[in-house]
Length: 412
Image 1 (cartoon, rainbow, N blue to C red):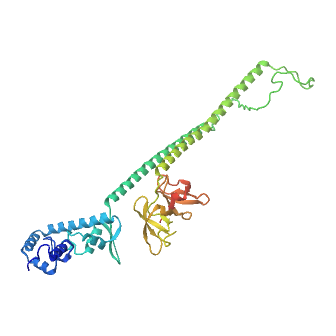
Image 2 (cartoon, rainbow, N blue to C red):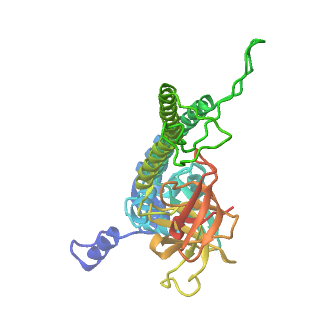
Image 3 (cartoon, rainbow, N blue to C red):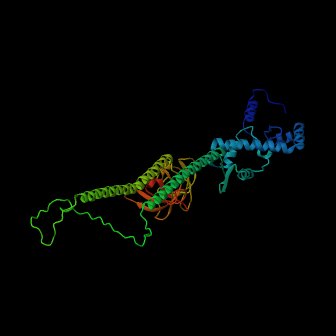
C-alpha cells in the first residue's frame, strides 16, 4: 500500500499518533522501534534488522539485561526520589508516571517480569521501605544522605555527652578528694586521749581556771570594812606575787583567745571550700543548660498528645507514640487507638504527657536532655515536677522544679 501524500490529513494524523504513546506490547527494546498495531509488530519481528539484533543479544544476553535493568531502576528511583521524596506512595502510581516517558526502558526487557518482583527487589536491597495492603504494594524512598546526616548528628551528640560526663566525673572526684582531705585535717586537729606517763615520786597537779572577779585582797586594795575580824590575822599581800599572777592570767587569756580563733577558722574552712565546689557545680549546670536548651524537643519512643483540631475531632486530645522523626521539628506519631493511624505532625500541634508517680519519663529539653528519669513528685500549683536521673554519670541526681514541657512519658 503506497504511503499517503505529504501534509495530507492522513499523513498528519499518522505523524501525530507517532509522537504520542503507543501500546507497550508493540515495542521492540533491542531495535528501539514502536509499532502501531499487531500486524506492524509481526512484520517487524520477521524483518532482517530485528533478526540481526537478536543475534547480537544471543551472543551477550547478560550484558544487555544488566544494561536495561540498570536504566529501568535508575529512572524509576529518580522519579520516586524527586517527585515523592520520602512519602509513602503506591508503586503502581510511580510506574504510571515512569511509562509516560516515550523513550523509557520497558520492564519486559529487564530481569524483573512484574512490578511486584521489582518492588520486592527494592525492599530486599534496602533501597526502599515496602509494604503490601489491599490497595497493592506501597514504597517509600530511603534517603541514604539523610540517614548519614542523622547518624553523624547522633554521634556528635553522643560525643558531646561523653565529654560532659567526663567533666562531671572529674568535678565529682575533685569534690570527694577535697572532702577526704578536709576530713583528715579535722581528725588531726581534734584532741585525742593519750597514756599517762609519770614517775613514782611525781605529783599530779590540776589547774582549774575559774572566771571570777578578783577580790580586794588580790588586787592589793584595802578592805571597805573598817572593823577587823577577831578570827583573822592581818596579812599584808605580796605585791610582786600579785603582779606575776596577773601576768600569767593575761598570758593565758591571750592563748585561749588565739586557740579559739584557730578553731573557728578551721571550722569555717570546710564551708568555704564546699561553697567553691558548689559554685563549680552550678557553673557546669548553667553551661549544660545553655548548651542543651533547644527550640525543638521531639524524641523517639515518647508519649505525646495531639492538641490541634485541624485533623478533625477524631484525633483531638488523643495520645500517641513518636515512632520516628522526619526532622527536628516533625515526627511520625502512631495514635493509641484501635486503628493505629500514623500521622506526620509538627511539634506545635503536640504537647508532652505527664505520667503517674513512679513511672519513667524522658527529659526532652534542658541540661539533661535525652536522658531517662523516674518521676517522684508533681507540683500542680507551679506546673513542674521533680525527677531523679536514671542513667549516665548523673544517675541518682534529683532534679527539682522541672517544667511540664521538659519531660514526657516514656513508652515502655
